[in-house]
Image (cartoon, rainbow, N blue to C red):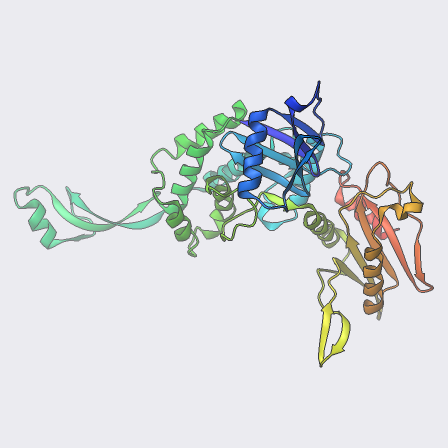
Length: 424
């Protein structure tokens, strides 16, 4: 499978349009045939949220926007879009993305071991997570259910179906037609897993991953493939003794089995999108790290919705304010409020005359938050980069309200960055 690796906001170009082109993390050159397939996909399956197509000096190009993750173009072509920020290589960028995904409940099965294999293509990392989940399940034991069966048997079990027995065995006195419940592994969940493994064996992976796929296929040899995946997924959502055990692995299985699994914005309840807007990933990552590492006397609220810009208009509050992170620190009988907003944008500390690249509207927004929440300390958090490694000098809104603009190094341990921010 052809795997194209590119950074967010990177550009894909046709190799035939340039003399001696050299690939980089942000600029990738592909054959005319592959470019045509990508172009067709852009115009057929996606909208301008993901890509922009342009022609400059008679040379075509497709520019990636700020969605990151994995995009399947066809059976043998996929694009990995990775975070830009401070990552110096695709491996670092992939590791950064996996770290941020860990803070979402669906992806909590991503572990440090999976971060360590970030040199592998993103698809193989995901498959490794699926196989690890399957290994855990097999160690616990596959689920089984009682399923109704009707058949001719040599001995009585369950109950005899008299009418059928006369019809089937009038001349065969050695058999008895019975109905019984069989405790079997042939259940929807296991059929889904077998079908998923059968599909994954057709992909090109490392030898170690391929061996694991074949190994688990042999373990599930007696289980049939699903002949109706949608029906089996629907049945598997019914609450049962197996629900919790199979929850995460079925979500991963759906990713690999759904025809639309690598496209965003699916409405299916099992859908686990593999494309993510970087603003949401960054905001959620920072917020969850505050929740994880701050002491108990700090209350962390994400996407707080208690305040409005207009208290009353025609007897209703209007223009709701939704700061990314609100932290309330209890000190004796007093409560201090801290407001944080995250922005996925590279700013430059060496350009004060250009306001470092900070948007004026973001400062207006923080000022409104400060007024409405009665907060003295406000914070704008941007990803650290080579031109932004230290906090900017404090911005004074008023005598009793200041704004701190801070870098967040995604390559550091989360606890380190949270401590740095709270001590700023």
